[in-house]
Image (cartoon, rainbow, N blue to C red; front, top):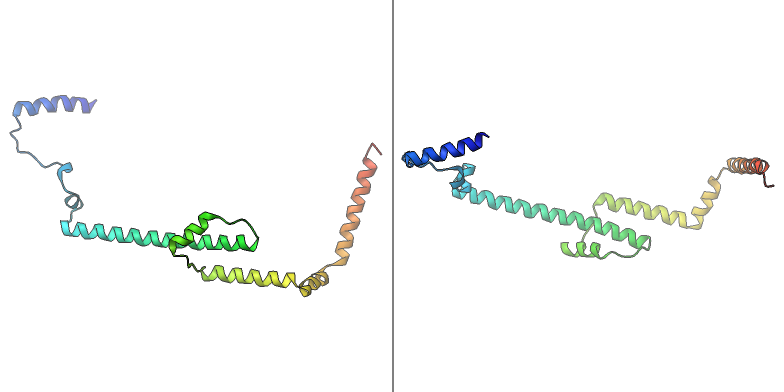
Length: 157
């Protein structure tokens, strides 16, 4: 409501005065450097810095994406899953030679060592030794008892 009154009255006042009261430079007429309170050279340097920082962030982001893609590719190879073209593309964008972060590489190496130990004959023998035969016997007996009780409750038999 106030806007409508101001636009109607303000426009008529300007017509009456004929714009005699000197023209002020409005906010929209200022250059971007003046709006920021800088000189033109400072503003151009500031814009260059912003562009450089953005390029650095984009490069770091692409590197991280490539590292993740390398990790996914490793797991796909390990578990014999189908390859993904987007992961290959992300790796190629960075240059194709992507190394995993040290922590991830260490974790993968530990997993490989553990799997090799489990896959070996000695690893299987150690699993047999670690089995608790008494608890296994108790579980089997409990399962049999449950089956007997359910068979007694069965109305068909």
